Amino acid sequence: ETGVTQSPTHLIKTRGQQVTLRCSSQSGHNTVSWYQQALGQGPQFIFQYYREEENGRGNFPPRFSGLQFPNYSSELNVNALELDDSALYLCASSLAGGSTDTQYFGPGTRLTVL
Amino acid sequence: GENVEQHPSTLSVQEGDSAVIKCTYSDSASNYFPWYKQELGKGPQLIIDIRSNVGEKKDQRIAVTLNKTAKHFSLHITETQPEDSAVYFCAATPPYSSASKIIFGSGTRLSIRP
Image 1 (spheres, rainbow over the protein chains, first blue to last red):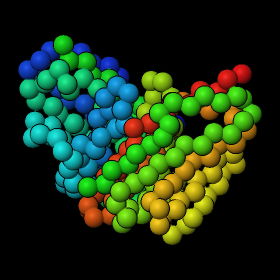
Image 2: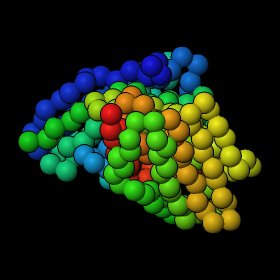
Image 3: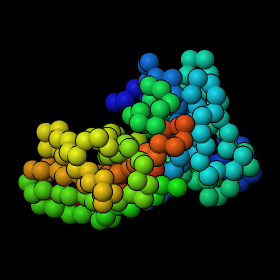
């Protein structure tokens, strides 16, 4: 167990809807990264939050947005859901925002878009 | 940007035998290489990592080797056991971004035959 928790576990939405996913980082960690994992593929980096600021972003459109709170927990928001957004969404926490910091993953939220 | 290729995509070995998974990366400046194990319905779990100033690292039955010149790194699991069955991901972290943006390989599904 990494101490990283995510909610909800599973979620079903329809095209065009909006969704919010939540993540609580491991105790002592101030950085949260979000990844999208499509079925049968490796996780893909969405963005990272460090001390409540976005600290890097992958190749995802602006309808993917996030927040980090003073207690370092984080939210991932996706607007105007598309069928291709169906995936496992993973968050990972790390001690700081450095490029060699070890990231510890939560169990993920399985999102299905119909 | 960084690209990580992983082989094989599936691997089946007899219990007690060794398993080897190989990865190559494209960005010679990448300096951190974690390996993750993902079991069904769970998030990736860090099993071992190596930094670019080290050529080999071992932790009980698991070892990782890094050849910076060839841009290759490999995971070796000895004396395999049924609980080693899972999907394994190699990854690399390019140093340019301010964020610890992990680039994952496509995964290897390892099955241990009893």
